[in-house]
Every structure is written in structure tokens, then in C-alpha cells.
Image 1 (cartoon, rainbow, N blue to C red):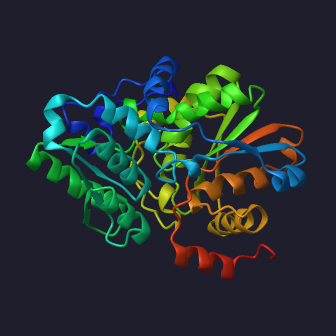
Image 2 (cartoon, rainbow, N blue to C red):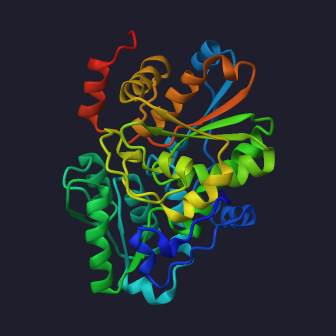
Length: 344
């Protein structure tokens, strides 16, 4: 396959919004985004993980995106997009759908630049993430059983209000902003061999592909739960059809519909794409909590699980695992600690 998709043929109906630019971002766009992002957000730490390094006989580093103001990487993209918002939308506001971290990103950036924000979330969304969005001044609308149902509702509302709809993946400025994390890695650790990256919509993986992949020739390995494999199927089979399975408990990678823009880049940008089990995700959360005293989301744990799954294949390599977010529900974390097979 040629690695490209025609967004008009995509079932991703958000492409009907006329102001959406689906031109893929470049590494140069990420460099330009860094000029904006560094004015509002700190550089995040890149820390050697002693326990994983010892177990895998590799140099394993954690990119601590959990230290950003919203506790997750996506705020980089929110800042870059909202900083250049067309004036006509500054009063009408921004509207988006989210399972949590994307919504917090847009809410934080909206507050930073004085733009009103409305966010649609699933009816059973992470209550901590909902509260965080509301604290940042966003209007939160809970609707439907999952992210995609909330997204479809919010898209209709965006048309009614004339607000600027912000897609969580098909937004070049979001992707370029998120990619600034990869430039920080390239500055600090230029001998990276491999990055294991969680994929929900694929924004983080695109960012690392455009930076660590392009500049350092590192292998970017995407990871998704086998209980929500829509993007994995898109990558392996070249289809953007919605997947009928979406059963993961890791809301950061919980999507049924592949994104045209991100997948168009990832078809060539990923060296590999792995699936991991829900049990391995749970054990990854528990492992980093017990061994490193880090609170991570299930999405981040997919990358931990994939690195462990790779085992001897990465011995001797320099490996980066993004700690993509810390915003796990407290009750979910307690349940994972109780149910995990990983020893205390």
C-alpha cells in the first residue's frame, strides 16, 4: 500500500467541517510548534527506569509527560492549536469530544488564551477527568456509552452553534504540538533505538514518528489493546472502517473509528504495531506503581506491556516509553492493584 488514505472516502464524518485542514504536518511544522509550546509549557523529564532496564537488559527511559499541567501529553497540541485560532471562533468558542485527556488539553489551552470551551464525554467518563475539565472552566456534556457516541453528538452541536470543532486526531496543529515531546528527546538522548508508543487516535505516535523517527532513525512501535484494535486493523489492512470491538478499560486507547490523518502518517511512520492483552495492561499499571511509584493510565501501560512482550529482541537497545498520562481513576487503580498477577 502507498500509506495514504483519501479522507473523503473515510467513515470519519468529521471531515465535513470546511475549515479542517487535512494536510499532513511535517517535521518542520513540529519545529515551528515548539516556539509556541515552550512559551507555555515546561520541558518534561526523560528519566532512566532502573527496574525495566535491568529486566530487559536495555537502557529504558521514561518520557514523563505526566508532569505537564494537565497530567498528560495532549496539552502540547492544545496550546499549539488554540494559539493560532481564527478570530471568528475566539468568541463562538471551541467544541470537542474526548475520553478525558484531549478534553483537558483543549480546556487548559482555552483558559490560557481566553476562549470558551465545550467538551462532550461518554456518560460513564472518568469522573476525575470530568471534574478537571470543569475546574478549567469548560462546559462538559455527558452523552452516550463511549467516545464515538459522544463525538457524533458533539459534531451535531458544533454545526448548530457555529463553534470551532476540534477533532482529537484530524488536526495538523494538534499533531505538530504533540510532536514537540519528540524534539525534547532528540535533544537529550540522540541515540534512541526504539520508542514504544500507545495508540488511541495516534497523535502521540505521529509526533514521535515525525521527530525521533525522522531525525534519529529510531523505530516507532505502536501499541493498542487487543480489546480495541481499530487503529491496528487500519494499519495492517489499509482500511478506515469502524471496528465493532471496543472493550478496553484503558480510555486513552478506546476508539472504534480510525483517524484518516494520523493513519496516513503512521502507515509509513511505524516500524511495527503490537497488540497487548487487558491483563498485561493491568499488570503494566501495577508494575510502575509498585516498582517506580508512578501513577500511570492504562493507555501508557500498553507501551510498558509491549516492551516486556518484546523481551530479548530489545536487549542492548536504548528504548523510550512515554508516560503519556497519570489521570487514572482512583477506584480503577485500586481494583487493578487487587486483581493484578504482578507480584507485590
